[in-house]
Image (cartoon, rainbow, N blue to C red; front, side):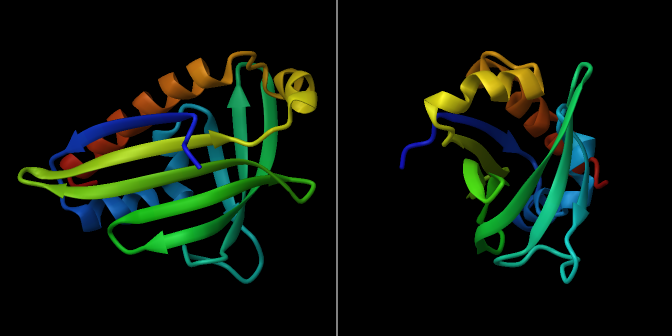
Length: 154
């Protein structure tokens, strides 16, 4: 399935450093302008295939939580997770890492799987009416902050 949106950035750091930062879901709030915190579900404390966590998000005065589950994981190359609500997968996020001469290229992708009938309710919960434009800006910020963190050795 083709993603609805992809954003890439070249980062001057190793693929393993970038992968470690991306898959440390407890650090995601440092990078994402929308995510404020993540908490592992019982039985999980690190990224692994099938690992689950709750993501806490904010957009202005709107706050909401989502359930996430790792669906694909290849060390130093790929991290994919689904976001669920009431057992329904409404979005898939992925991070693909490719080595370059000066470090690596990270591509963050988003696939919107919400049915048309849920768009109005989703917008009322998040305060986001144009999810593609909102996510594009957020993804650019996330990759900028990721680059700053790993390039400085944080």
